[in-house]
Length: 114
Image 1: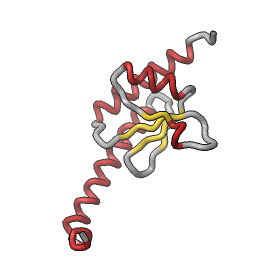
Image 2: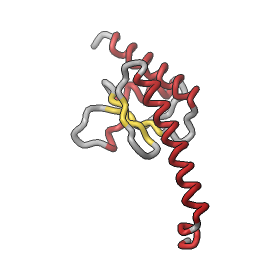
Image 3: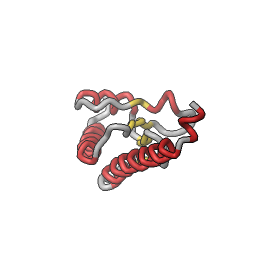
Image 4: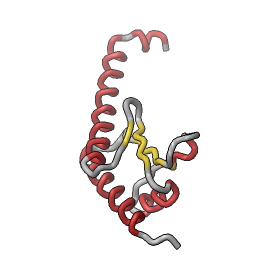
């Protein structure tokens, strides 16, 4: 294991991987920003997106074949949000997801409260 971590090829591979994930993360954040949806994610595999109501948004996105995590289990004193993993998300999927999230949150905002 120590030999693997000290191998220059491993370091190069990790840098390439970080660039790929960074590009995917940026593609999603940019696609959301074009729709005035705020999202955060400086590093790592996840993007954090504030939403009006976690459970409803998660369920609506699941109905559209998107699997996201409700932020409740990852937050303490922040507003409701969803966590989106970008590890396999390509540019086209980032645009499609942003479109669907915009549709879901816009529809929810228009629904009357019972």
